[in-house]
Amino acid sequence: PMFLFTLVWSAGATCDNAGRQIFSAALWQLLRDLGIKSFGGEPTIPEGGFVYDYLCQFGEDGGHWTPWAQVGPEYKVPTVAAYQDIVVPTEDSIRLMHIVSMLLVRGKHTIVAGNTGTGKSVYISMWMQQGAPANT
Image 1: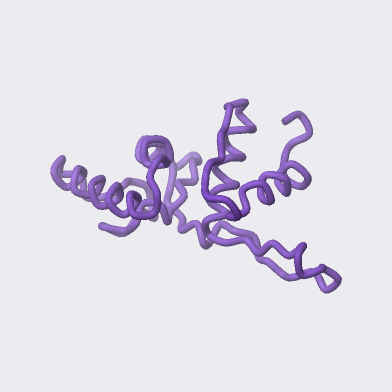
Image 2: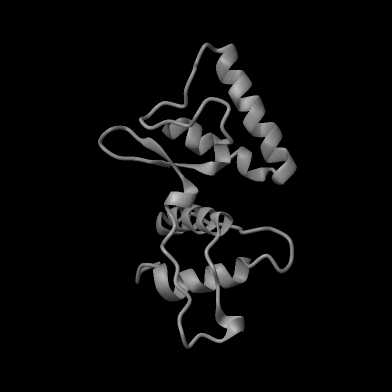
């Protein structure tokens, strides 16, 4: 599972949304051509599933696949929050912050690229204030 997870989030990370569909389908076709029927790990990604929808959680079992939607924190809007200060976690933001956090905590230089107004600066700022280890 580790190789496929790193493949998706290195070579496959360069894709836009349309490209991700193509990359996911091509990766499944390559696995089928090689006679590989799953991404490994238990539970695994359903055959033909969108590879970007799953996180490989590594452990003593070697790794298993979990939908990103199940990884995010339970969110409750603070009762005194101003509207402009409310940031609701989405599957995309959970994915972004997990991958960025993994890289930064390991001392890897990281660029977060994307369209204007998609929340990149907000999420990085929130991570720096709330989630980053003290020595990062």
